[in-house]
Image (cartoon, rainbow, N blue to C red; front, side, top):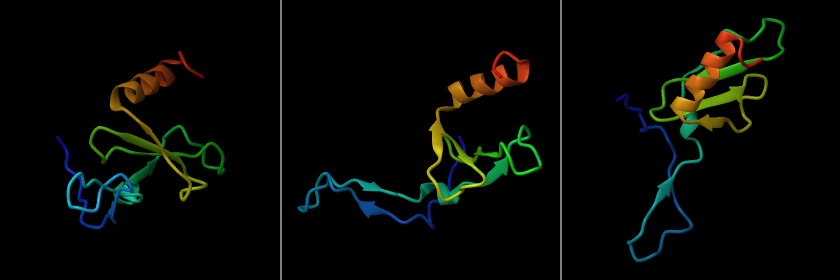
Length: 94
């Protein structure tokens, strides 16, 4: 399994954690800043239909609009993403 370097991720205690040290859950709002993005080969060079994907986060495939990289990314489980890509490649999905 791949590992992700989380040393530069900012963590915060979840609002669902209690103050006595128990039930502490930390979350990161910027986990995707560790992702290495690449433009999809299906994106065109004139600035339209630009999709970026990252395959560097285990158990998730983040996808974002390269024209708006600061907006939220969509996260897909690997199996459905693989099925989607296969359908696009085969022409089943347009």
